[in-house]
Length: 638
Image (tube, rainbow, N blue to C red; front, top):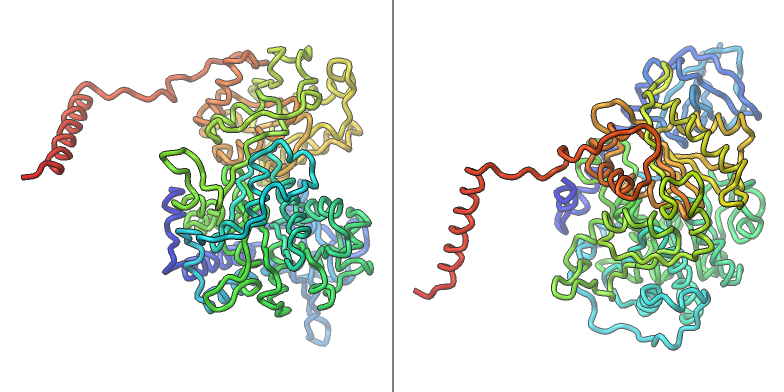
């Protein structure tokens, strides 16, 4: 199915198909949210001024499609028949309520009408990018078949590495040199970064080298999340003067200022304490501008000169829709039938892709990122003769600096052709070996077999598993109280991950009761791009037919590759091994003696390749022989 989805786009239908998929996504989300509209609502204050809450049982339909950032339009009719309207933004979705913030305080003595709307700014920017792309007639550019014969030549010996760790990594060095030399033009250059391989370090080095070696270059750095943009900015500030960097925030970022470092705010358009648009002098005077994909669309509206930026970097491109990846390109480095800069895409198509709220739009192909689609084109695939990528257009990073070898092995073999090389420091990844709780002393993975109950509360749309929460509690208490091999473990060294939102909420509540407030608890999506010395994965699914969205191999890959030194997976093996990938992971643990808890049998028969019946095998043999005869006849000269 995935191949079909990706192949629906071609140079002749590119813009129209993306517009159609966006229209479907846009309409379906608006329609879904309209089902939550309600009348005669009494509101309750919640915490700070202008914050309010809605209980889930106030909704006639469970609001499972709401996300943080969606808007609420609140209205009531005044005595003089005029309409009072106040806009609110959903700030948090809790276990049994929705929290939102309004632009002004609300009255409690009246009943409000509430209308729910998605934040349409991102999709408006995507429509804008598609319109520019069509006007500039550039669709064929995104289906590249070749690269230019000539390119710039900064020899490798001219590079003095800002990050000394790159000195022993040939893939990272080659990527940086080829990005600086723009070897892929006019095609985008792809940095394929599997988990823990130093993708962000490579990007930062490449941007810093451009800043150093190409004084006239101007770089736009983008990513789908503020978290990634802030991380890139913080690292660049270590090697590039702050005067040459502009972190361009959206207005919504004002609410996050308390979580930002002073130096990050200082080089941004929040440096006066409130949001403001950067002046032309700031924009054109900064050699490196960093923004989210959506905020980059504001640069088009500001009519930035189309030849100003010479490089556009898109980090996390594998988790962005194709249309959103066009936002920092179309109208920023494009003119009629021309791309006026070098495009660098980085990410990993084996990890989580774009978040699509309309299942129909997703199955049409909207869930296939530009990065993933391009990597399926011949230009970006391995040469079948050499089994190697064309390093002028794509580099796959191979050295993993994050995880213990046994934690890396499963995903390495299952998703990365066993090419990743474990290179993490033994001081960082070996300290959990021989821990008394490990079933296999030299294998720092535990699969805790349990048969808990899948539960859903009446006012919730998500599931939790109390037995698994108790096991999470057991391991956290054991680790924090006793340490591991006489080594004390801080709370912030532990992460708990679950694919179910309700389970995350319940685990957070349990941690808060114990004062374990520094332990990170979140969804698989929340942990993408992050790592922890110890990760505990609670899978929740139990006693059900099928594994639901646990069958998503990208979600499995992300969940299993966050841990550095110790990985604990808690789940029902009878349920999980219904899925072939989960079956293989459980067998990996089983074969290495890493199973604890309730005894079970591996269901080998379910996943065995069935032999053909004798009759079918005979017919297959005959067909093969006929094929060979026909093939032979084709080369015989009559």
